[in-house]
Image (cartoon, rainbow, N blue to C red):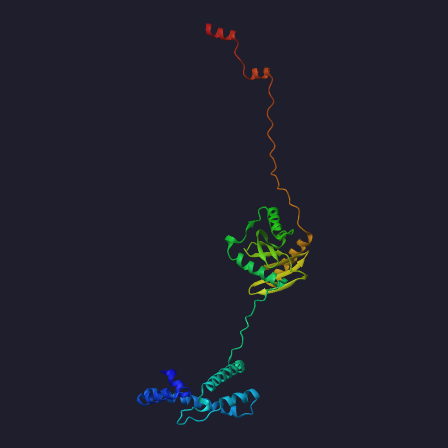
Length: 314
């Protein structure tokens, strides 16, 4: 068995048992080959660690060396020092320590660098991001006439009241009739700074522009700014504690003229609602006065009874 072969190589068998194993090895070539392998492994450990053992030992190491000293196996089968069990154990421990140390020291050479996962950076709300949101809303809601507004402008007072409630501030749709545009309705949309209001206008050529109104980012006060994204132009600014963005597929000069009209109307404030005009009432035709009874009798004379009788006699 392998345990006896290891004990034989390590010189741990008594005389009778050692002789029995030697007879077994003489008859079993495979067992003899394994014994040679075990001895070769021990010799290899000797080649590796012999220089270490030749170094000036410390007191503890010197004591261990003295305990591990031995001589080459002879007729009495006493194994060399490197083949003894304690030496084998010490060598194994040293191999483990050396392997662990080498792995630790070489970790920077072979271990991949730690992967740093980029954390998403919160997008800071600015007046520019407000204008970008307004432009995106313009592109989306002017693309399909079926969904262009959420509430029509038939009753502009009701539209302004509803959007003011959603935004949390008093807002209104300016009168742009002097620049050729009429209000057709609006909707409420979310923004990074809260709810916003989108007013939509149209002209006689079916061109649409939108005015986006909402809460400005904190601490952002700005005069007129311009942005061009493809065919969509945007003017945006802050006025009276509200942010405005006017968007349209127009040239910069065309949109600037409309922006001035919006600004002037916003500065002037909302106009009071005008009561609906009542159609003028048609005057009623005078009823004829009741005629006196004598006149009615003259108009419808009744033949006297005497004349009737005379007419019958004749």
